[in-house]
Length: 361
Image 1 (cartoon, rainbow, N blue to C red):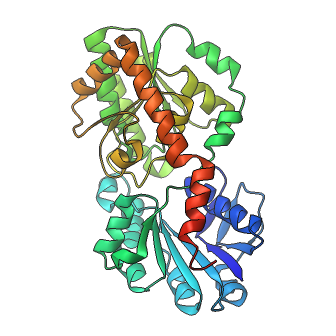
Image 2 (tube, rainbow, N blue to C red; image 1 turned 90 degrees about the horizontal axis):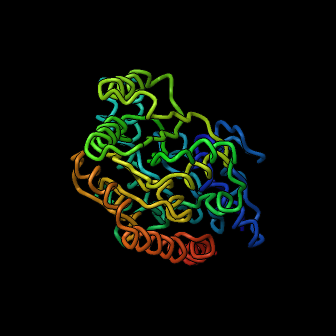
Image 3 (cartoon, one colour; image 1 turned 60 degrees about the horizontal axis):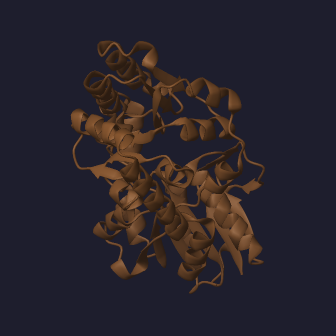
């Protein structure tokens, strides 16, 4: 038996890339020869092969092919039609194009192409369709995947590496100046709700008058410059000035310092297929306040405060309550840690991964 993992691009410190690399490591640890096939690779110490060559390696009836579906990629559909073994579609979700309307025609078109492929992927009749969340799997079933072929496995992550990392002491010191730090981690993109987040932060500052700071951790994209400018304009409108810190490119030590120094992790994201930073917050003990869109309620479970509205004053009141109510804060931290250990810890996920692949293995 051989195994092949297929994805358009493989990048270090990327959620899809981390998931694919973890699967490769686990399969190799079981003694299965495993290769990664992609068009581009960067920031990884891993040999890759061209997608067109995959059937020559793992195209037989006893082989395993796992396709990480997160963008439109017709090459993958062709490859999956050519192989004869156990085929798994790993669906990470594709952002609906309307989130990029008026911001980027390029991203809007790319998302439209990707979502147009969902029915095509469903019609392939693969042996297993593996969503990163029940929200994702439900999309595939709605597109025609038989429910009995759908399953859920949270994405593999690097949270244990984050737990073991040394926090950046300089950043910890800077953030430990008495201000209440509120943290958001995620790509700077329209579906992530940063403008609404700034509104909620402004309500917190206006309503409760505390020394407060909003940390926005996430990489800006030149192709989404108008969205970045919209966030900056909203910050200026609320006269928040130096209260908002942008941390564009952070290493593991800086990310850990940001979590440890923050009094809450806050997200008003409007579309997520899973949201790995929520798991990082659970593991590191940063209380969560979140907008319950898409897969977020499923990921958080009982490990945070989740609201079905984006009313900024509700988030402001929630953050003030978290600060004032130590028992609530500690209860949420305990619940989040339990959820991490029971659902998202590496050993738990490894066991589920192999249970789901048992028919192939």
